[in-house]
Length: 505
Image 1 (tube, helix red, strand yellow):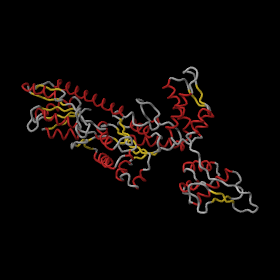
Image 2: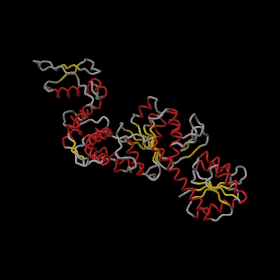
Image 3: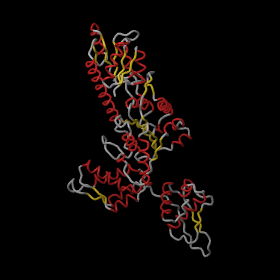
Image 4: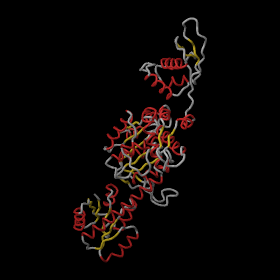
């Protein structure tokens, strides 16, 4: 339903125009003068303005100039008496959409207003498309479809318990108007989840815009978010709307929101609290109706504790939190993700059917994937492009030996403890084994119980004893052993599944 603001100091004319618009199914707002009209434009954001040309205090031409400062794409139709036609024509040169000569018929009014609304709608859509294209859809963030395709729940690939939990959370928050904070490691698919939320929400017909907060300087980010007036700074040769304004009625994604400066954090807090802001270089407050989604790959509570992120902003963002698991925590989803990527890339490249041999699937499932879903997607694209043989439409089988070099060079060598095996003691006493990590135990050694004869047994024994020494603290234990805490977690999970270590470790 379109909203039209009618401005006229004469009550009879004002009510007559409003009645015609309402009978046509539009929402008609009324203002008796220019000052009241400007307040309604800023706060209620109508789709068009119909104003009398001659009014006390502020004329229709003066109102037009002020409206264009707030929103230069908002169409203004002027009503004028026959003797003022020349003035109305001059007003059109200044930016008015059209004019109506009194007296006019109701159908004439409706045709003019509908044309104005349709023209403004097309201009807004073009502005949104330009904003989307200017940033190349933010960053891939594990994107699994190409630009222009719909993002729904079916785009969240995977049936692991972790992925089923994410899908349930997405469905739960989609119908809400609350702010969503999506956290997870880089490459886990945070933007895909954000788009799914938008597509499932009542705002799906509105714009979806995104801003990569980590890619822009403070000055550029401020202008990108809030827009600027002509002459606000060097190079600002015209008024420009920001993403908040362009996303009105839709969704705005703040990608990597943890990277914004303290000054921008303060402005974001105000927008989230009041749903209003001012463009750079302007004192005119603009109200918006935008749902905000935010992503971060950092530990925001830790950033708050360190003073790098405002606590009040964190609470405003963390209304509906969603945590995305790392790919190594949902490794059972790797085969279906790989199959999805291979099919999409093969269709894009005009290739025949591409599939993985069982040994290749086993290799992919045994990899740690430090780059998460994005890394898996890159490996699949490399496999499709480099596996071409014969006709482009021939079926291709991706073999294990083809993938192994790509995964090996990306895997950091595990720094295991330097183990010194002493001759078997004649008495049943503990064996001392030196540890060569960046941090060592107080006595510089780990003791092994008798019977730990294989290297795997000694490694497991070393890790268990170190964890016991540090009361189960994984980071301190990993530092003492000279391995990464991620590697430590993977080993413990494997040993727990095999019931080789206690469950409480």
